[in-house]
Each structure stands twice: as C-alpha cells, then as structure tokens.
Length: 364
Image 1 (cartoon, one colour):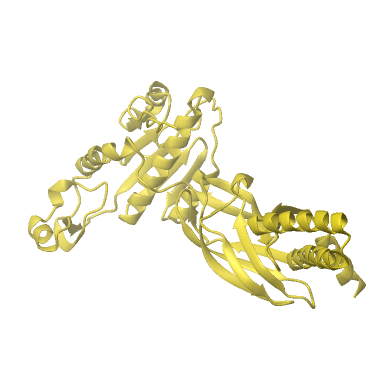
Image 2 (cartoon, rainbow, N blue to C red):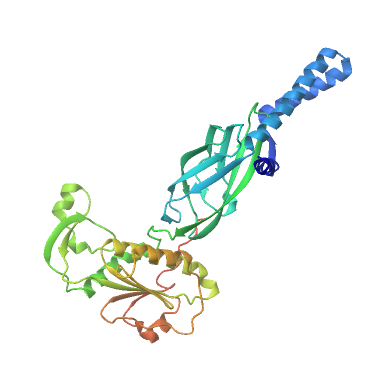
C-alpha cells in the first residue's frame, strides 16, 4: 500500500500547467467584483457568497488535478509504418488510481516532440479507477527513421470548466518508419522510360498468355489490352507466363557530399518506391549499398530492404563495388556517375542529381 501511495504521489506532483478558459475569466471577473463589493459594503451576505465562490475555485483546482493524476498512456503503431502516410494507431489510457475515476480527459499528440502526429485529439468522458480504455486514432510520421519518443498531453477542464489543466507525458517506445512509397516528383516522369529499358533488356520473357489485370506503374504500354480497357474504363494489361525470373540489381551510393544530403534523402524515397513496385510485380531484387547486399525474395522479404532504407545515412567510401552479375538489369542512384562507370557500372541506368533534380519547394 505504501509503494502504491508513493507512486500516486509522484504522479500527482508531476508537472501540470494551467490555463484559464473563457468561462473561467468571466468567473474571475465576477469574483473580483464580489470581493470589492463585500469589502466596500461590509455586507456579511456578500462575504458568504465570496467564500462560496472561492471554495468552488479551490475545489475545481483540486478535483481537476486529481483527475489528471495517475494516468498512463500507450500508443501502439502497426508493424509496418510509412512516412507521410496515415495509419490507424491504438491509444490506450490507463488510470492507475485505485479509488478515484478520471473525468473529461482529452489526449493529444505534441507536434514539436518529434513523434507521431495525431490527426485529432482523443476524448474520454470517464476513465474508471484501475481501468484501461482504448481508442483507434489516425496518425502519421513526417519522416523516415527510428522514433524512440512520442510526446502526449493530457488535459481536462473538470469539474466546472474554469481552468484547463494539462500534463505532458513522454512515451519511450521505438517505432521504425519506412520511407514514403509515393512516386516522387521528377522520378515519376522517369518510370515509363525505366520500364521500357527493363523490358528491352529482358526480351526472353515467355509469350504464353496468363491473365488480364489492372495496369501498374513501371509497366510498358505495349501490353495494354485496349478492348478490356474500354470495357472496364481503366487501363488493363495482358500478363504472360515468364520463362525465367526477372532480376534487377539496385544500387544506392552512400558516398554523398554534405551539400547534396537533401538529394540523397530524395533518392532514398525513389529507391524505396522502385523496390516496392518491382517486388509487387514479382521481380527478384539484388539490392546493394556500399557493403550492404540483400537478395529479395531469396534471402528475405521486401521489408528488409525498407528497414535498411529507413535508417541509412550518407557515409564516405574509399571505393565502389562493381556489379555482382552481368546478366541483370542494373539501376544505380549516385552523385558521382563517373566514379560508378569506372567501377564497372557503365551499362547501368545511372540516376544522378543531373537526371533527377530536387523538386522545387512550394513557397511558404
């Protein structure tokens, strides 16, 4: 019992902020007028009313603080989260107080804390003592990477709405966020040309008809079935059985000068989008990046590549490895095309800042 009381006392003594509401400001104005009238007139009835108002203000502060005390929050994200894409997260709030419930609790994410951005605040009318309540909220992470802290703020105006009390809570839980999988500006215009090059490289694909399915990015337009397209109102393509598996060797050069860090970030998102699309189409990917190599799907799934791209950063390299295979279609992202060509990537499709400039920023 003593340890429980000490834990509750530490929670109660936590940092709590106060902000007067509009109703509270009006109440304070009336309170000040009542105090002046009581002192000026010496009327005992006014002093009684003033005492009752002060007692209500005191009770409001105590009950509000008790309602905020003893609350714990947990935010659970899905297993796979992508940057700049909304996802349903589960917010759980637990009331560790063993006797008193919490009333009118509002929970919202702190945007400047470097964590998940909650689309809207979550409201709990009542959280019973010792109970855990849960709600699903829409959230998103603005950038790729490992997020180890999520900031949340509890607030309540209970019981009279005169003061809004708030308390901040930091949740220590690591969440890995993959790069965004949306087609990036500039790279989207390059996709048809890359698709044509890949198809021209693998002319030995089978010609046995397999099925008709919706068109996807990176596919050649010459397989479009115009009759099925006219019938459905959406692009449809003819798919053929393959004689051998298509393999793409994808290389990301981490040797980037400091002034091109923004372009490197742009290249990471383009690389992730390309790998995701190729994997969805059944292609085999040999992914490499200055010492790192992985074959998908032979060694692992596409999420292993995305995990690497979520945490990768620029790093100086003494030399560049040459291509692992000569019979695969090769595509490389680099800021030094000439260095890659000298290392044996002369036949590869090289994407550099010249071919893929950074998209113009929208005016503030």
